[in-house]
Length: 384
Image (cartoon, rainbow, N blue to C red; front, side):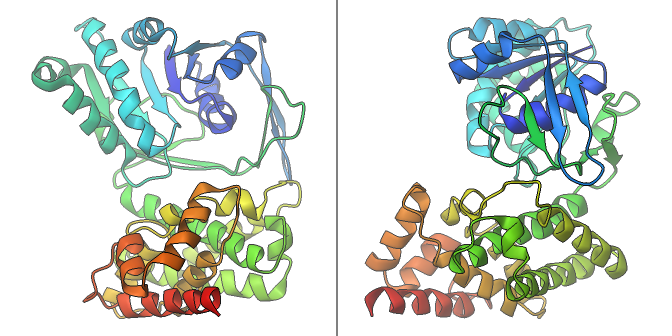
């Protein structure tokens, strides 16, 4: 069995690639970072180091890497002969993956089983995004190619922190991981991925992860940055920050229970597991890494405004989510372009213009006035 994975970074090697290796796939990494591609091809094995309680080391073998910028033909050839294609490149990069997949499908033997395609991104229904890009790039040829692929959305979760100096292509990760995959698209022939679990309805799993892990991680980062704390684990050691993060996640859990009928007791256990992961002192994760790209994180369907908007529409509490957005507005990192842009926009635009442009909320939405209030409060500190 063969798999092609787009994105040879830490998530690609330390999570998706690892599980594909454990499933018995010969693995081809595709990336545009020439030094990384060369480093992968210079070794016959790399080690995934799990740090924290219960952590183990796992050696990965049977892989190669291709520079898709220099050798797209080789990537296309690999796709044509693969069983599985996965990605971990970021949702905005999927449009660059699409033409390679289209060309690979065109070369694929029509009698072969359909190529199983899964985008493993921090976005809701990322595989749908990739499929739409593939269909658009294929144009009129799509009707002839459609039967050669199946697409399944996934929800992925594993913390992969900044890596230690001199690690090479080895990867340090936390022991916990979750990979939920839609079952129906595969029929009776799902991919063999040990540790992944297949579900009939993925939406609750996606939103549980995004509105707990992603919301909680970012909330910790923004309150930690406000307090001048460097590490995520140290931020949660602060009782006040820990209480704020816990209260924020109680609001997102209330939404998940109301929307998806998830069991509140199960959600409480899940929250405790997530917070324990964030407290792992063996993960050298910083508030600056986790908090980067605040404009994206404050956008309409992301980890703050997304759940808060739905909660407000249902009349559920949102005070803690809005307070976390206020902390996000204070995130001021000169090394992060979005942080720089956000602080500039806060100075240049009035509260209504900023709120509408960044959050995508309509002024008539029940959440709008609450968010505008924290925007105006941040702006007042910048002009004082």
